[in-house]
Length: 495
Image (tube, rainbow, N blue to C red):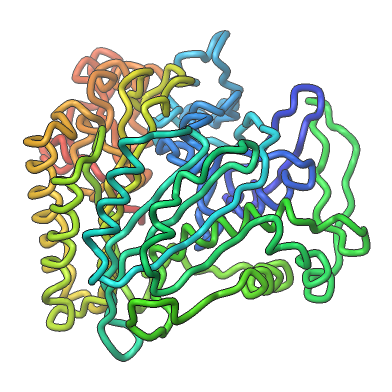
């Protein structure tokens, strides 16, 4: 799929055509040269466009613009029959268009996405780290931010983090504060500023003032754009460092914000455990790190911690809101899950809080993944990294136990219900497929029968939507007697 790597912008309707083999950092680098942005996934750690979009797509900008799937205009798809079609919201393949929006790789192989783009003001962002001694104040500030819900243009992501990676155990509470720069509002994160911080990373327009000069010295040559093709798309210009404003503060602010978000899952820097500000990481350090990404080849490794040496998993429960009791329970559970890290090869334990604004689904569109206006929810994510295949069983069981405990607390507190759909991109592979698609599951099975009656896509990995039993009337072989094939837990490993 890596050959499907073209990114083209169409000025007539301000949409972006993206090959399914692209990574998000490639997409962002190119669309930002048009002073526009797309709603996408992480620009770090090799996150691919296809998997993120086909899973639903929660973004730092979802509170304003919806999920990634709400911003898809068109798919190009190779059907199991071998036919190549273009699926849109209207026309012959409108049912396929809806099914692909969160339906994973169950219906064919997507080779191209056409996405909406937006003129978004560059964000300002702060990554604040606090020692555990300040946990009560930090948790109180998180609760107050959620209850105030001042604007959809302010996003908070908090995480309780435990590490055993740099010669000693470390723990901290991290709060990422992101604010769209287009609103002149009272700082919604002001309460966090009154709490002594362990360390701080920040990006904003003023701090990145010297970024173009720094990047000109660090980055290399460029490539030129091209004329529009038959569909009206033109090649997007890649950064040209000979141009005075080709690499400017706009790109830097977006990439720095994304890097701050990804650092929640990364190992902590070796800093002193003190209540006061002991380590400041300046914007120029982030700028120079980004400059290196322009000149160095992208790493082939997957997401952080999931590779040949370290092993890792994401897991989640779905939460419609957070209150003080649930936040306290998440803090307590994170500490408990980190207790036996050393004895079981543990390297990182991260419990994340990412509250959704009440208006997150105001612009929702009909999709495979159920999400409706007026019913906000998002994933409360657990991320664990460890070493050694012999420790797999312990950590997967520990994640399941922790998520089970938190789910029942959230249920008791009225912060979730048993009908919220799980987010496939951060769900354990033990999650039932019907728990992802909920009320849409029956219709998705019928759509899959229509486009894949021979069950070709069963050979692909991921969460598998089963064909309905009536497929035998289409001359298809009967169901397998293997419960792992036809059972509700239909996650298929690649390979």
